[in-house]
Structures are given as structure tokens and as C-alpha cells.
Image (cartoon, rainbow, N blue to C red; front, top):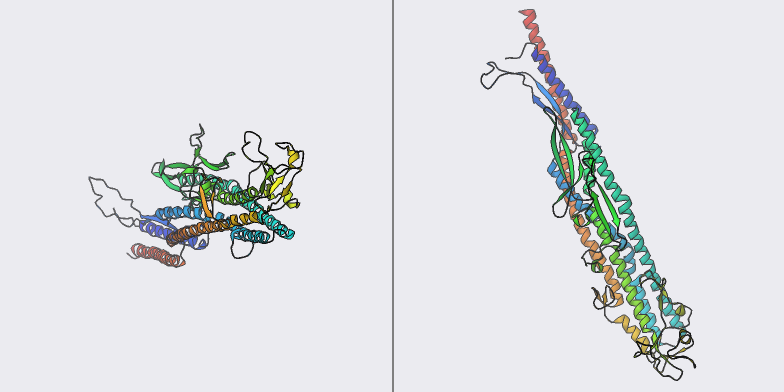
Length: 558
């Protein structure tokens, strides 16, 4: 059948209506050109066909001129670009967090390990060596021992200060993880689930809910920086002929396994905990409770993270390099805390060990240890350093100058043949009270003990994780070289992470530019659309005027 006489007016009206709606969409795009996350919109329209017929019989007449029908609105997005962008953002989040954490450590240790002649541990070790050398040259000058003690005091206070600053960096990182990042992730998951619910309700009622989808896409982009995710849209039928998409967000493990984070209007959650024994932090997640019955089991995912800022946060807090069990190549804040502890432990225990002398009785005879070590001569210790907390270990934040040395009750032992002579009447073996009544006799040597101490600062030594030959090797060199090496390792780590971060930032920027070229509003394109739809509207109006003239001729002039 052909269109009726007045049906052509409907064709023109539908054309004007479609053009008007297209102009409305164009205006919507232009006014939201600066709206964050806004995606360019368009209208879906089809040619209207109201004709009949069957597979056996044709209608017999041409079916033309029924007009246009606007079926809805849509967004200009490319799911492939979205997937690539979110994948890159996961790497960006990982290396940005890692670089930021290491830079916080560097802000402290750059000062501690610098070798340019200014302050810092490295240069304080040099100063200690110089003061020890001056004492060795003139061991009888009392001011030289005082200067050595002052240099040692500055050294241990630096170690105390740097250890406390690193502890603060670690504490801040822990607070950021458990009080900021984890709540942020859970809040994103809840908001996405709520948006899924609202979008689905709107689509069931015939509304495209495009602005809500923009909000959801922004949240998904943000979530992708925390951990690797995969987005899936599952079409479901809600009424005859109408389908809506249910969105699912899965966490993708390093083995490719997918664990649901969001399923339609149901959100899962993530949780972080610290082990009281190892002090390691662990991450777990609970999938969405979609059936309202049994609550899903928590899944540990610490070792399943491939990328994302949560992975870097955990590594920054847990990774201990050679100190780990097992040892790893990753180095976090605890690695650098342990390196300072190794420096402090090896330095103070070595010099304390060198500043002790054998005990002799009033006649100069050896005093032996009580059984079961009665084959060894008793030694009297004159520690240069002591623990702040006697119950603790030798660590950078638990050392200070020994009280006896600080009070000038004794100093650095000068000769290797020095002894500690007990007073007359001391028991054998002596009681603790007897040991307090003796005195140091330096012997006939010049300053060979001081020279041996000086050599300890100048010879290479093997630094290990536990201070024994069987511990994991860390570095071989002098104390000064060990300190400088801490800064070198840290600098190399930051440099490599910055380079990787820059590569991913560049790639993410290029992909985002491609997304913007497709999805963002362009004034040039919208200007062309405005002109196109304006002319189409005018043409439809002109069609209606022409039809009016035709009817006027048909009715009034024939």
C-alpha cells in the first residue's frame, strides 16, 4: 500500500521530531564539554516500516514514505580501548605507588648515605675514623678520646634518628593502606553496585541512563588503578523484546583466574590484616553475596595480585629482599630498616668486642672462666656502646654510648697487652663485686689496639643478614662503603621504577587520547552536527509546507 494522503504529514512530523531530538542531544554534548567523565551521546533512529505482507504473498503495492523512528540514545565508546586503558592504569597504579614509597625512603636515606662531604652516616663514619686515627697517633691526649666519644655519639644518634624516620614512613604506609586505600576500594565497589541497580531500573523503564553510566565508568577506571579487573556485560531479558545488561566486575589473578568483585547490584569487599608474628600484611577478598544465604568464604589474594597499587603497597610493607623468608628481589621499607640495623649491629658489636681485656689476679696470673668454660681466660668488657632497651636486639634505634664511656670512667683500650688486674683478696673465680674492684693496666705496647680498631674501619668485611657466615650475603666492603651502597641500591631501585612508570604513563596517555578522540565532545563535530540537523529540520518543515500546497491544489483548485 502507498501512504495515505495525510500520512505524509506524519512522515514530515517524524522527521522534524527526530531532528529536534538530535539537536537536543547536540546541545547536551556541547554543554557538557567540560564535564569530567562525560561521554558523547547520539540518537538511534531507524526507517519506519508499517507495511504488511507474508512469505507467500507480497503486499502488491510499494510501501514508502512512513518516516523515521527514534529508538533511543547511546554513547560513543569503544570497549576495547576501555579495557586497554584500565589494564595500563593498573600498571600505573602499581609503579606510581612503588616509586612514591621508595622516594619517601630516599628522602631520609639520601641524607644518611650521601658522600659529598656534608652530613649523613657515611661522612660521620669518616669522621669517626679520623678521630680514631688522631687518638692512635697520640693516645695519651685525653681530649682525643673525648673527641672520639663525641663522634661516636653523633653516629649513634644519627642511626637512632634515621631508624625512627623510617619507622614513621612505614607507619604512614600502613595507615594509608588500611585507612585510605582499602576503604576507598570498598566504597567504589558499593557505589558501582548501587549504580548498576539504578541503571538497570532506568533501562527497564526505557531510559538509557547515560549519565549514570558515565559515573560508573569513572569509578571503574579508578578501581583499575588498585587491582587488575575484567568487565563483563551479561544481557538478560526483562520483558518481551527488551533486554538490559547486567555488569560484572572480576578480579583477575596472576594465573588468569577470575574472582567476582561486583555482580549486578551485589558488591564484594576487600580486607587487609597484619600478622602479629611476622608483621607481614595480607589482603583477602569476599565475593558478592548474590543468593542472600550463606556468606561467601574469604579468599586470600596477597600472592594472587599481578598489578595495581594494592600490590605495591603490600610489597613496600612486606618485601625484605635478602632478609625475607624466602629471600626476594623486591625491597620495601623493612629492607632498608634492616640494612641500618645490620650497620649498627656489626659496628657496635665489633668495637665492643675489641674493647675488652683479659682478667689477671693481683700477681698477674690468668683468671680462668668457671666451668664448663674453665679452659678460657676470663675477659673484662669495657663496652663503648650499649642497648637502650636491654631486652631488645642491637638495632639502629636501640643503641647509645655506654654509660661508662660517657662518664669517662674508661675509654678506648690502647694496647693489645692491656689487662684487668684484680685487687688483693679477690676470689677465683671472682665474684661480680670482685670484678668491679680491679683496674686497667695498659701494658707496655704503644697503641697497637687502637691501630687494630682503625684497620677494622679500613678493611673489607662480609655483611650478612644475621651477622654470621651462614647468613644471606648483603655486601662485602668497609663500613663506609656499606653505607654508600645502601644509597646506591635505593637509587637504582627508584630509577628503574620511574622508567617503567613513565612507559606505562605514556602508553595510558596515548590510549586515553584515542578514547577522547572517540568519546569526548568535539566542538567542531558538534558544530557540524548542529548544522546538519538544523538543515534536516528545515527540510522536514519544507516538506510539510509542500504537502500543504499539494492538498490546497487538490482540494480547492481541482
